[in-house]
Image (cartoon, rainbow, N blue to C red):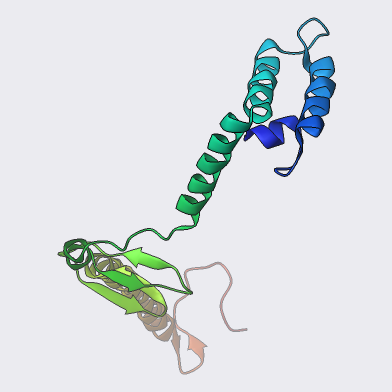
Length: 169
């Protein structure tokens, strides 16, 4: 937090305004009144810096340098870094780093590694094989059930029934 905010004054405040702001805050934050000693020390330091014209000029120059440095764009990455880690755009405007040595594919609008795609493909094939096996078993059961029914019923007449009640009346 800068000194102007700590004293709750603008950067164009006069010495008189700074003194009155310091006195107001000192009454509220002094340790004898119940305030914090560290907070009072910070307020006192801000007042001493802003009330002295020479120290205030140095402080304003350092603030301007910090603001200028914050607004300056960061330098672009070196060419070696760009070759080593290529950037691939993914959804909207975000940029995603892609490691070297892996093959990447666009599946829909999602960037997927070749290794992950193969792993999911194996799982899908395995799942399909399991489902197909279950269907074969069910079909075999249906064929067996139909064969049993054809043996039991010949020409609309029940030949032999395993239950107490015959199938036809």
